[in-house]
Image (cartoon, rainbow, N blue to C red; front, side):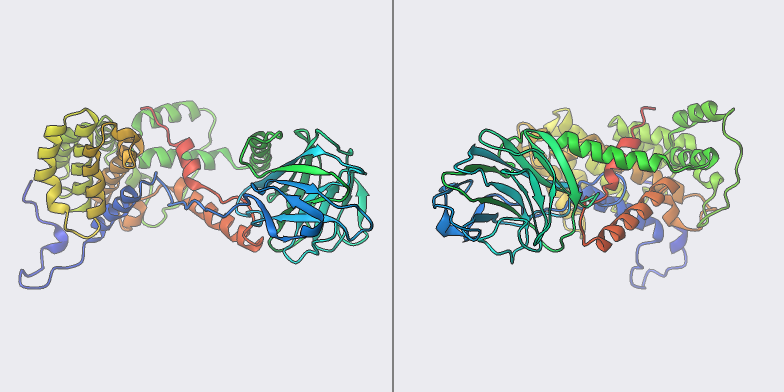
Length: 472
């Protein structure tokens, strides 16, 4: 390594306590955290796991009028219907999850019994369990004998066809449109406003002798193509977004700054050529100490370094860094050096050079083992050696292209930070496009919180993964 001194440390006496890492080092730590979590470029999106209904709740049901099978997925009316309070009602064991685009479940009518008074819908936890869903407040139900939709005491309306033995009927919640919807044999019957608050339980009811239904909470394929429905709903949202007008020169500058930031020089040239005759000039004021000249800084060098890291040529990339930017690799125990050495180890495992990988790990990775923030990634990297097929192992994420991108992004940001004109190092981390997407994420989360946390979370990394594929 070169013995270049960091300018920030020139006036530090050797007898004083070690100073905190300079700001540029914090950039490396940002990417180290992404590497540790196996995250793609962009915000750290959190997948939201919720408990989902899996079976019928045999404790909270009108048990005297129905029989639930031992698998808790089938129910049969065993009594004789005498009046309106003899309904056999049963809820799911969990409420419908809310942090998603759509929730949906189905029933299959095995036997419509004497009168076919079967119902499917949603109810609150306090619902009276001897009444049909839709007959009481805070409930909604689609009934098989008359095809009516019932929504609270005395509220009923024409809705869809009746259903009987052999039919499969579904009920769902569209959290984007805030509607209940119902299906019959894989076709949407209709939708109605979701005017109920609080946790809602999938609910079914049987109300005449020998009525029997089987319930599907997703343990097997639905008759209704839910994936297609969800795709159509997302397309509706996308169409709404695309109707919003944005001046072409503004979008041009946003895209251009993204390509500049990440060193995609060839794509940038092609993009400029394609837009040359169609996009009028626009001036955008300098922001956060970062203007166009700053993100054009050493574009060719950054392009070369990214290409080398993408190809797994880490030794060559380290050599170029030592030659062009010795201050970046001066501290051998920095997060940037660690990520580069870690990637070199991973590349050796990738090509099957295991003995060389073991030797390299002892020489280069061992020194990071006891340092805070490095240990778990060292362990994951070394663990690759334990698997005959490391790509399929729990630590296989290290062999994905996204891991190379994290290292390339680290080096790219560190090179940008060497520009003497840069005033705010945070501008080295993200281009304008990603900052706009961060703001969009925040707005979507606020909007969802105002809607009782209902609906699908905005996943920034999905957007970025779909837009960042650069083949230059």
